Image (spheres, rainbow, N blue to C red):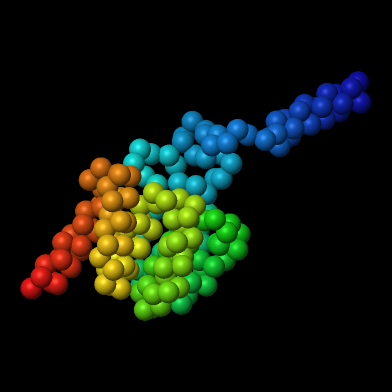
Length: 180
């Protein structure tokens, strides 16, 4: 009797494990909107395709939040180390790559910064924060047409979002400064 019970429980365990290990369809979501294939992905919500410094992030968060805290306190070198750990675990982590770009931009390393923004935009062309940050960097580099291209992407990706409004305000101010 005990042997039959062990076989029955063991079989149920194996069936449950097989269900957990079976591949999920691309983009599979649980009821809470979390991407089951990538639990670190931001929950789906209309109009959002990229984190900003102040957005809530999901479970990989301990290291990511640590990096955001380092960025907020101006400790860009520390944040770069933390973000690089995340990128080692997931080389396509768009938010970590974007924040790496932001750190290098703040350090004045424009070439490195732009290379990280390009990595993000090559895989996620509508990533809001990367488009905004790249646009701001292009303005710093006096590349108005490049910044306006990023603005157009933002305009098409979101309606009246913060990233669009902030970049537009910077472009408008830049235009006034060169006219004047």
